[in-house]
Amino acid sequence: MAYPRRKHRSPVASVSTAPDAAMVSDDPATTRKKPRFIRKGKNVQITLTITEALLEQVDEMAERLSLSRAAVINLSIHQGMARGISVERGNRETS
Image 1 (cartoon, helix red, strand yellow):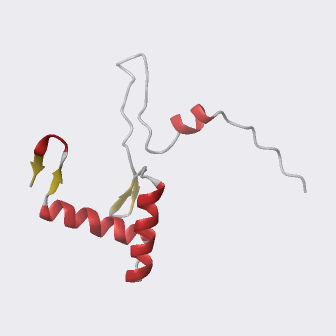
Image 2: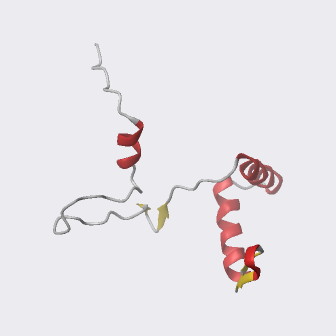
């Protein structure tokens, strides 16, 4: 059985139809902003962009702790939110 060929989509079309992409419209009456996440049960899935070097560090820590990449990222966010995050540029601190 032959399967129909999928049409190739442009990168812009792929990005604009991503689940966490915002909806853009010229008509304010019909514009309804899409959520910037996908619901997965009680959790939400987001798109995260980080450097390759940071990803390697996350993966190394995940392996060392016998955790998944997602677990290490979640724990890091929880700990950062609980302890506060300092931003060295401009000497701003958020606690």
